[in-house]
Length: 287
Ligand SMILES: C[S@@+](CC[C@H](N)C(=O)[O-])C[C@H]1O[C@@H](n2cnc3c(N)ncnc32)[C@H](O)[C@@H]1O
Image 1: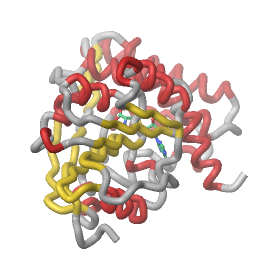
Image 2: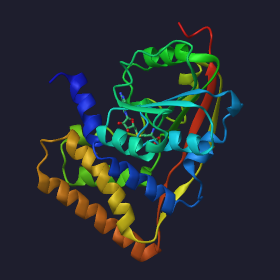
Image 3: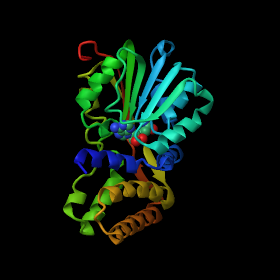
Image 4: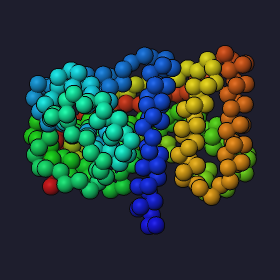
């Protein structure tokens, strides 16, 4: 299999079960220090919402953003695309009563032929780090926006959830996992809060960033460990040659550490700094 197909398959496998994405969303909903509705925090920053007619949500997951726009009666036509069949199925089920307005499709957003000057709102939420050729992709998106169109991308800080990743990679090293599995801490490289504005400003105008500094507060180990298991699954997909008992040892070590932390300090905190960028069509770059 060539490396491009392997890359896409890894994303598909990672997101193959939409309940995993829902579980992660629910952990943020239930254990965040600052209780905000993420979709509202993002979409309430939309200017001139009355001008929005057609909406495109790329890597839409289980469709939370289109659902929120429908609830708020923002926009009239919505298209959501995702590589994961399971996510698209969940998204479609949730908007079944609006199916004449909403179209969900399984597709690789890097190869879709987008109509020019067509969309008033394009969203790429927590997904731009998956895009291989960002320059080509973002230019095409800018070209497909209407003149007054708005672009939104959410992402995380480069040290997002570092307590989780530090535990994971430090234990991997002490358990003697091979070096090629411990050298890529996956910290939103490619598109994060710190570099987002400079990346997007090449393709969109008036790019503005917003940050939400938050923390997950775990007073019992189970919800953290459930969350960690979903991340661990992605690593098991990625490194299929590592024997199962190594992963089991790793999980056991992380589990013991977190149980101990909570026993001693009554709480285990995980930083979740994330945010968004909002911009407009840049007439000069959309070629
Ligand atoms: C972290 S989830 C974010 C989902 C949703 N946008 C949200 O913010 O809740 C990333 C999503 O991007 C999708 N994705 C990644 N690369 C993609 C691609 N090339 N084409 C379509 N979807 C993609 C994944 O399947 C996954 O559902």
